[in-house]
Length: 213
Image (cartoon, rainbow, N blue to C red; front, side):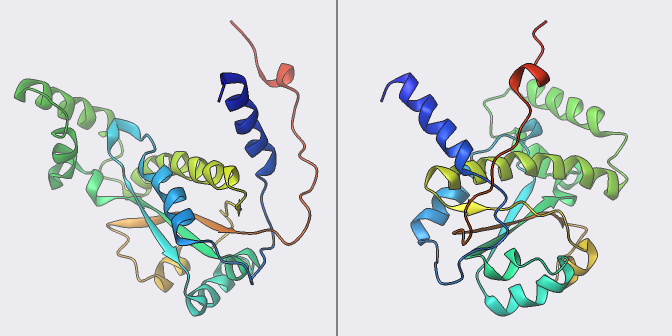
């Protein structure tokens, strides 16, 4: 495949992707396809390489039904094939717990370099490390990178998705029985197959949003 063909394939997937509001309940995503989508999340970049996320893949219909009232009663929650709840790490991002050092130590670093990276990480996050709400805000931003890659990967194999921020965070966390000192819900991301035709994609023209300096 030529470079131009690769560009065209990618842009076709970008055109295909939209926020699907209703999924076909009779169609289920094959396991190999959902694993492909999740693999793109695993390979996604994160600040300092911390990978401060976890992905709950919900196929249990009863659990979806329990979540829906706390997600503004949006039909995507119960009509999707797979509902991925993206969690943002809290405790694992605090240097005193040892996970940060373990993550950094995966690189081929001298002890001096490792200590330097750890100091840089701690210094960078010092203003928010003692405030879980602020730490969540930083951590959640990383999860959106993974979410974007998952949605685009799904679109390349004609699987629909819809990122959902409209939910009652505390109630969703209670339904999922989360220890919010460890992980908190950043985003809900249902996947499946569309029922209705895709609406027109409306975007600014490139010259309206891009400026070369």
